[in-house]
Image (tube, rainbow over all chains, first blue to last red; front, side, top):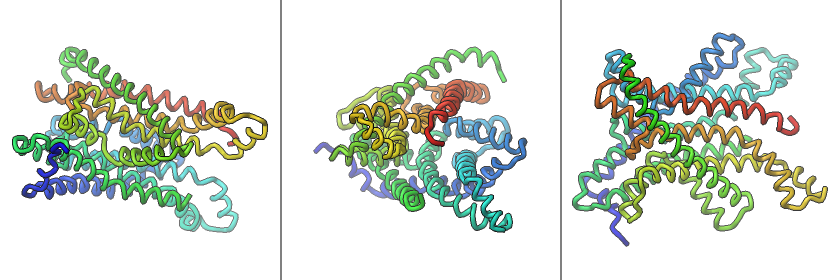
Length: 224
Length: 219
């Protein structure tokens, strides 16, 4: 059995630092998702209204954000705002801004998809039954939309967590950065640490995302 | 905006874009192959191989590409597997994309009703004919939207290759920002080149989806 350098993580507070790095990534994604879910619901609802101007604006926003790689968006906000407006954003704030913009676009698309997937006869039947407009939404449309939406938005959370690994590239000290620091600091005593430490990072990311994916799949099966 | 600077460094971006596209395309081709194999294994319920692909799909879908690349590029040499950055990029993309492609093919295969197979069988088609003429055409056209979405997703993911020091678009932009402090111009070129790569794929994908909707049966 070759030396894989996992023991490095048991020196001092290394493991704790790694977990703190994971927490930084989780914090960014949880804040972003908490903001983008309500915003996304608004954008998604706006996309289904009949007003052409509102529809066009939200469509352009959605397409522009979704076609760009998230890393490009991070660069634009992190380096671009400093240059263009002279504002000095911290890496963490820049990433929250980007992930809120991106999450809102993704969530908006999911909400739009769920809303238009409700067949027209649902509206018509509830009207025929004498339900008012607010009753129709409250008892008929929203419950059905939520069932379709919830598994997908839970999946969006795991995508968000996975994408936060990119914030390393704009200088936020998250798990990967901490892992690099640990490997660098121990390169003399355990030269093989890169394998063990990155393996642990891989496993930790998996453990963070897997239960959430399973929950999404369970709900999807239960409600479909 | 300094246009002289933009013209001067245009070739640099061009080369980076070609590298991005090259690795992206090779990676996506391998991802499709991996996806096909995994979907076939799951569809025919081949024992053992089925469990292995299930584990692989979970591992690949629940970890970020950046972490997979770091593990491949910095971790693997320590156990004696030394891969160049380009190979790492292709392997990483295939590893990540394989599971997404597998899911796309699987959902396409599952969407074909049992009635279709039974009817084909009662018409006297043998199992190879059923697969070739009845199941695959329907399954593939159902999975096209997901395939296009996956291709765009994987092309976007190539942006993280700069982390393993591949000279791609992100790397070039970051380099130029660091060297000359021409942030606006560098970022402008970065966005333009990514649009040049991604917009055509997105437009072709939309057209293809619209065309294939006619191929759908029933509704």
